[in-house]
Amino acid sequence: MLKVFLVEDESIIRDGLKTSIPWEQFGYVLVGDAADGEMALPMIRKTRPDVLITDIKMPFMDGLELSHIVSNELPSTKIIIISGHDDFEYARQAISIGVEQYLLKPITRSSLQKVLSELKTKIENEREQSNYLKKFQTEYHEYEQLSKRHFFEKVFERKLQLKEVYDEAAKLGIELNAECYNLALVFCKDGEEEIIRYFSRFSEYVIIRWNINVFCILITGDQSNIENLTSRCKQNIVRICETYPDSPWNLSVGKYVERLSQIPDCYEQLSGIFGYRFLIPDEHVLTEESINQIKTKNDDDFEHDELIESQAKNIIKIALKYIEENYVNEELSLNDVSAFCNVSSNYFSSLFSSEMQQTFVEYVTNKRIAKAKKMLKTTTLHTGEIAAMVGYKDQHYFSVVFKKIQGCSPREYRNSKEA
Image 1 (spheres, rainbow, N blue to C red):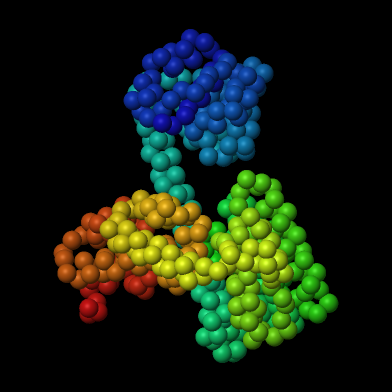
Image 2: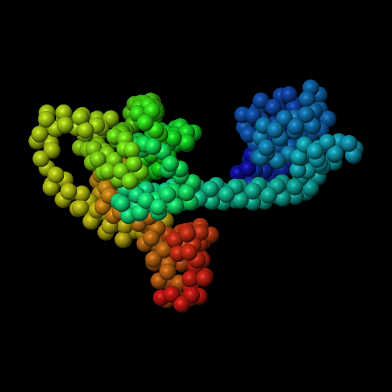
């Protein structure tokens, strides 16, 4: 239901509009009314209506002044002005403010209903466009992060020559011309937005989402400041994470290297330390020294590597079977699968990425698109039907994902010669 607020100083007219219009029938709910703009404004700020209907001539604060304030504070609110004055100047001012409709009294029920119906359609269209834009921006950001992660994966695995590293980094807008480099890995259940916001402010840090709750931070600097930059990175992660005392988090910071080609060595040493967070989750800041101390005190806890590895493979086996049976369900989530496997979502996310060399979302998406490709070639079903059958209710979103992975639209793929 869309929210509407009514402002009219003549009580007879106000009461008549309140009772004569079947608000709910037209998709609205009346959230308040007032006799003048001064009384209405605090209530409007509180209820944040989708539509404001206001008289133009009122004591204390007239409709134009009220409309001006509302249009500045709540730009998405649509304003309908009703007036007993057929005056061009009033209409001109109303238009300059951005008022949607200027209706002359006496207001008939049918004319107001017509305007409300048109506004409802307009608001719904605008919201649909806004939601699409947000989804597109989210998709683009995720794609950008995925591209960066894939790039750094190749760097850490030594799959690129030095020139290729520089070339790909330039394409992604990543500057790799420092004297020294270091890495930090951080797992956090809460505080992600604060961490992203903080490190995105500084050119010395490149933050990459490694999986759902893990970030990798590349630290770039020179001999004179790399240790200070590393210390600042650590201090701010601890500061942010400690604001969520009931939320799990872990951090490991590497030892800086002086060559770009040595970054894989830094990552290899760091990831080995960071992996101990599953065994000692309450040890927030993981270092080589802290792990050695805990090993010494708890030798028995670290004598079961083979058992842990076996358990991990069994979890993945169970998860893959569950995904195979449920991936066409649009509601399938990482939380669903981790709950089915009886492990925490954070542990499952990291385990899945490590074992499968791709994130949970990537794996499910690839399965869905593979199924869609087969159906596009072997059936005459409409794209929308295929989208629904592989887990996408939104046909347009399905097409966007399909093109991002396959490089062409579903229709182009169906008409291509590719088997």
